[in-house]
Image 1 (spheres, one colour):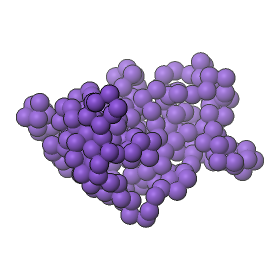
Image 2 (cartoon, rainbow, N blue to C red; image 1 turned 135 degrees about the horizontal axis):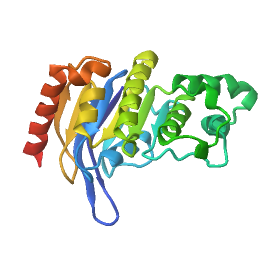
Image 3 (tube, rainbow, N blue to C red; image 1 turned 90 degrees about the vertical axis):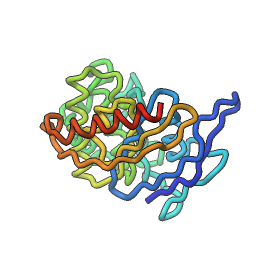
Image 4 (cartoon, rainbow, N blue to C red; image 1 turned 180 degrees about the vertical axis):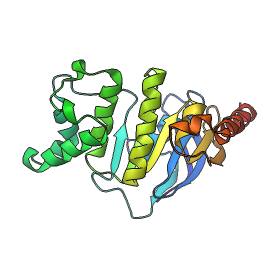
Length: 243
């Protein structure tokens, strides 16, 4: 679906965030970008989203540049409009594209149902827990029916119980929708549980130092599977070697 070819990014303050990153992402894949803070994971995600441009190198989409609605983006914070209901927040990207509520209402309801919030369409953000607010943010990204879902550490601020539940729900959604997910995380445990490919990045400037294919089974019990423990150990060894 997407090829990144020798991509580099240096900011105006002189910080070199990425250096010579090459990566192929297949349609339907679930890729985790894993590495220490400041290694350029979020910068790489912004380049894929078209929110920034590389200084060197290129990004080549198989079918040309993404069309409106093709990409969904979930930020580290839920970033919801505090005065708007859950349904109004989910409707926002469609409204910005000029789609009327009468046309969008069923899509908004379906997106909320996909994240388990059918009964909370009229709730304001302050009436929702942190995990529920993040579910609204994911629904907002899903309402456009994207082919690619970009997620920038969406569960980092949540407690471990909520985080595990949302990870399991995200895997179920990915299998249901068949979309491509690129997921930024600094948790090797999260990467090992979620992703089918774990792309390890070096400290700044970010380079890809290893690309690991996962054979961990799906489901909540995967964390108890020997393959999960073996993958965590393998990731740990590679990260230590790259430090």
